[in-house]
Amino acid sequence: MPGVRDISADQFIVAYASHLKRSGKLEVPTWADIVKTGAFKELAPYDPDWYYVRAAAVARHIYLRKDVGVGALTKLHGGRNRRGNRPSHHAICSSNVQRKVCQSLEKIGVLEQSDNGGRRISQDGQRDLDRIASTVIEEARNNEEEEEEEEEGGEAEEE
Image (tube, rainbow, N blue to C red):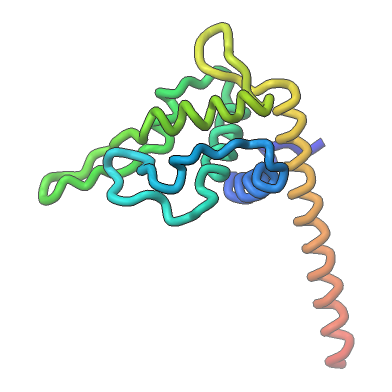
């Protein structure tokens, strides 16, 4: 059975974020529309669904690794701190945002606290992520088959 490792990150994150939004289980905080995601940012994210995308990215990252803490996630989602005419450096993102995303995913049963510190994926969460990944792969296969049929049909009409 295909899993999360078998598809590209962007395809999976888009699919899982839309699943989280459709299900309505993930509770988005009231401050999500005005908060900056890091001290190095100037504005809040333009995408109104950024919280779902971040939750999907966090769930995928924790799925691929065992015990991941908030500090590791802040480094992962950090970015470039532009310091004027001085050289740019990497800056970490807001740890509060990462913590709240993890807590939201814990509430819906995707993540759980680890004994070694940090968080890990739960069995229910692993099943959900694998199911989403398999549906994405099936859709990609169906699209490829349809495109091949259209190309064969187009070639036959030209002759």
